[in-house]
Image (cartoon, rainbow, N blue to C red):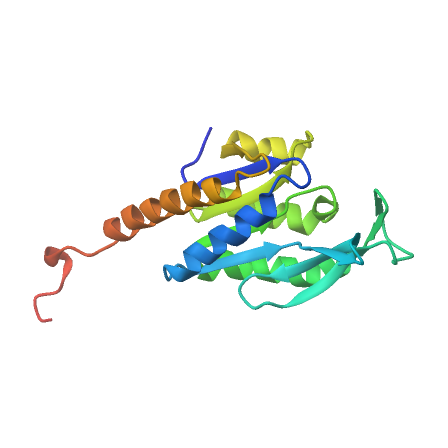
Length: 195
């Protein structure tokens, strides 16, 4: 069953998922909306992708967690993944976002990230909560992602769609927060008479 305020952006590599998240993050921050979560930017050397970092959106703390230079850890494609490094940034970042923020972003929920059982657990907690959540995921069918998609608005992104989709999500999130904030305002009759 679909939950209000849960969004998954899916697309092929290079389709603009991360660009869309970056644009959306800028718009939300400029509007004073507190956003937390993680990004996993690619690391390039002379134009060649060498790995991925994990970044805490709220604090900016970053570490490399997947690299062609790593000698140990599980393999995904040409990369070795250091799950401990990933979890040391991602898990606290996502828990903090769940507790302190209005919106949680997860870029990306992919094969590398899903090697972490702790990551799967915190993502499930986020999706079961009432907090507005935006994730990106690959087009390939992965059981955990399919479960998240079943309770989310799924947005398929193609190259060149980043600006349009970030605007759509910004407006949708702003409206959801407006409704949420207005429903939590105390009415005059809730205010004690001595105030």
